[in-house]
Image (cartoon, rainbow, N blue to C red; front, side, top):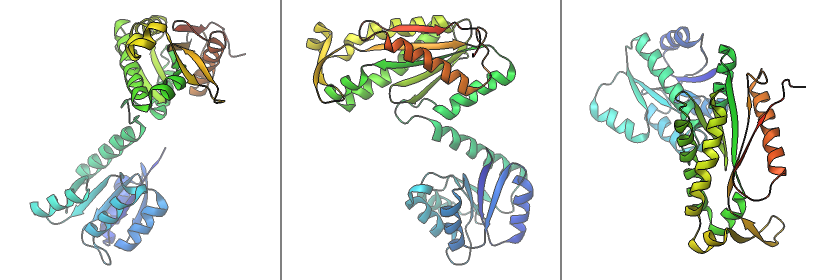
Length: 313
């Protein structure tokens, strides 16, 4: 998807240079003063802002301060364009939330490199789950599409924790978050135990994870994940609950019921077994397997299943 860059600079020459430099890769919005820059940032939702320090109306520092107080632009990368090389001014700018400085006259190659670096890092940061720091759905989709494009066979696995809501309601969100973090670690360990060195582990959200790995190693990754999770389950509970293997908690209708211990459901599809032509197919087919597997069991140890069908029909 094309990135949008906001350039706030009253110098037409700078706007022309930046337009030639980035126009082929990004959509460029130009603002001529500080007030116009703030309005453009609010309306255009830029992915990065190039902000001149000396502008009519509001100067760059004032604009930056406004940007960092607005929820929509609080984390947007801002590169200051300035003819000032005073260290104190730069220190103050970083204190206001600037991400980088480019001194005028600037090297076109240097400016382009900084812009692309900040865009890439910001995109990765936005896609990362704030709890586990694992990449989320956008990165997962990019990984699957890259493997499809390159013709590399792969296994796609979905994993989620059974009866997690009851656990979270009973013990509270802090304990629930610890289980999520522990599960992320266990899934990473499962990939390593299976000898998977180039795999991808993503956190879709909540207690849902996805793994992309070598086609032949996918079943082993799933088996290790189930085994490691079951080994860790007793440590997730208070001693009394661990000894009985169940907790008492209200269900979605508010009725108090006995809930069996946590387990992991892992379901996947192999691109060599069943050609995967899109990210949506990988998600849909593995999701079908996960739904089927969950419908067949309500307690017991972790379980795994693979789609063995030969076509999408």
